[in-house]
Length: 386
Image 1 (cartoon, rainbow, N blue to C red):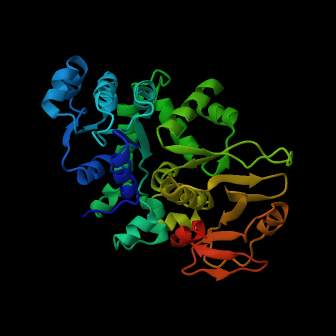
Image 2 (spheres, rainbow, N blue to C red):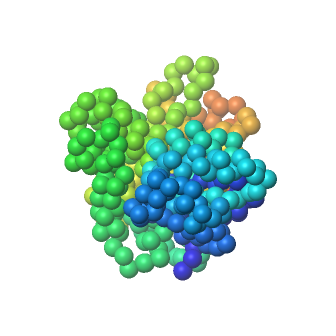
Image 3 (cartoon, rainbow, N blue to C red):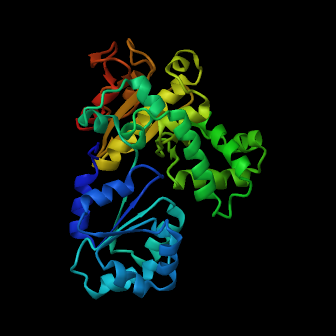
């Protein structure tokens, strides 16, 4: 079963206007399947195969003679010298578009190669996991609670009987062993796994790097490096606070969010829907779920800048800004919230702020006391488009 991705039209458009298109993102978000489906006329080669990577590195001319100059190259970071040769081929005929479709799951060598050799010749597109709207458009019925635990990795929907706990155990092992072992900043993989789980327990919280490093038993400098690794590899995001010179009392520390709620839930030890009803971590997991869905939507349609608001007495989980307009929203683990609470006070402090919104588990939108609206998460697109 094919699940149509919202990014497909942008990817096709990019291939019509750029000679090189780069698709990056965490492992198993569907990059390979997507590009093979959208560009069937291209030849395909995966550098996951050591023999292909060796030829690409050792004999790039022979590599392109065999595969042509209209090719999908999967996991291109395993042959970084190819970037220079792609540049030479592209510069020989700058009017030919969509020649090279490149994918990569390790952003560190990938982005270095792109910035050094393909600047001005490529568009970079990040592919997140599946969104609720993509599942809805594919007629896949799933409850909010099940979606929180299952997350957005396509394989979990292509194979609905696959156990999410087993999937994520394998995913973490693959991430640690394949992606991180090549990074010099990562010494002890067991310590890094503990660090990863400690981050999950702090999702939706302000980042305290010193405390995080101390709890895992590593130096603060190592903790900073490892947070950067997680962010660059698409596992987490650090959501920045809204700050302007006119609001000196605002918090300036970012919030940590996982980009996939299923992975966060697994690392938290929340594996069943019954756990959501009793776990003190459920509210944080719900906020991260809402964050991840906003991030997915914005990666497609853009426009709004996402931050959060927090001062000494009040907080808004999400603040979106575009062209002098503001939206403020909270994530509430409730089916029937009654009031926007402190969001009403924040609205009064922000010029041009629209009515507050609570993302909750309600089945349908409804108005709240003190103004504002309660919205179910599937209504997110409407929220962003108004």
